[in-house]
Image 1 (cartoon, rainbow, N blue to C red):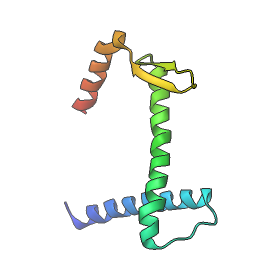
Image 2: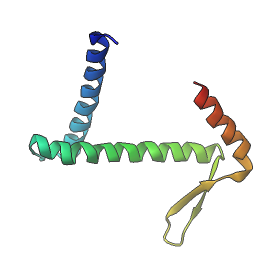
Image 3: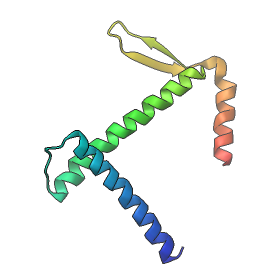
Length: 100
């Protein structure tokens, strides 16, 4: 790997962190903190928020494809589980993804 590749990777990582900080500040416009506070609180909190959104989108898509099923508890919480009728299809999806 040459130094140009390393700089490009570092620049992409820095840009991703910049976006997390900006998104955090957009949601918390009065926030102010030190470097340590930003590292300890802002970036992880924003990462968790973004990850939660990505997980919800993935779950919604898998439910739409009937790969996983949902049930709701009496408290209106959704529970997700494998659709065992689609196990062969799921195994094929995993196998195909691992080949890439």
